[in-house]
Image 1: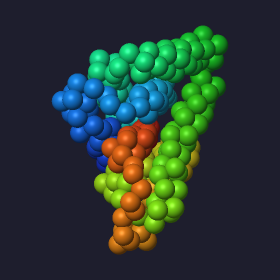
Image 2: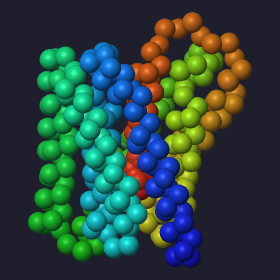
Image 3: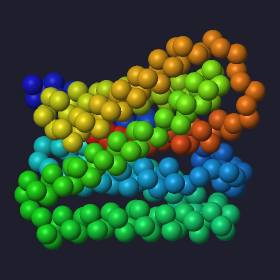
Length: 242
């Protein structure tokens, strides 16, 4: 059983890396144009929080180094994304991003780590951080619901990237199996939720893939940007985990 869980954990790591790297084309565009244009920073700020929390969870819970390693990588990648955003964003968006980072990635993360280290011990510390990680991941995995609504409304998958949907579906599915095998329900529940939503995305794709594209004006790059989360754990997925 240990060998099987390790196998699924390694597979989940590989898929999570692909999800973390999926925005590379977006940031190549930002770097080339030397502008963030109309892109939003919040998806990357939130993914950074998720990856950092899952890294911490993987460190404090014995035997979950596979969660810590991939999310540690994801944390570094998201730091690069956020840094590039701060470099190329216009003044108003830059100020907004600084506030987001300060509240979410510095304030919330610092409070969670400090409280767990100073006020909690043993299983209570692990359970508290695991609960926070799971909640953040579920919220992030729910982010494609708006895109799914757009697909149903326009009867077109023109703005729903198949590759990203497939990687999220695959990553969360493997992480859910890993969580089940190692009996880690903080990994299982959010990734199981992500797997269900990922399955729904692929079903919608199969239903509407041959429909005539809508003439509705939507920036597909911005829509894809809003799907980053997750994590990805590890685990985050988180994004998971993760």
